[in-house]
Length: 127
Image (cartoon, rainbow, N blue to C red; front, top):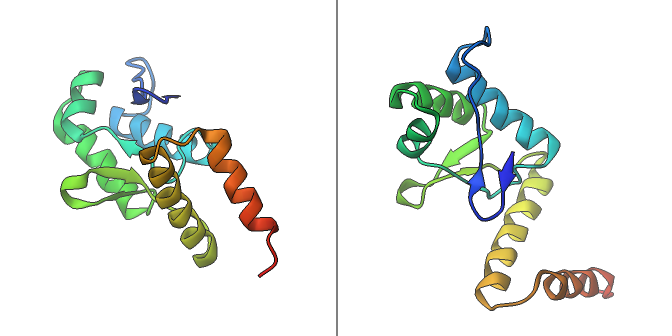
């Protein structure tokens, strides 16, 4: 469902009994459930996804509204729409901290393996 460079990829089955907005909603929910859409993943804009899927903007907007109501995605103003943190309060806070750390590590040019090694060392440290 996702391509790290291009972001999430979605499809619409014109022959399916589910309406297109439900197909989009379901693909996002399934992606979050199976881990292919992790917290902090940037979602395409409504207009971009509508163009990609050849759907009306209002159809995609309806799917995004339903996903926001279910706390699956969140809109951060001009920054865009992202997959929301999930789970209990402690898990959500840890996911948000991990997103901030990953963003900072990428900004600093750290390789993923090096960034993970730093986290593992911090977790092993006695505090």
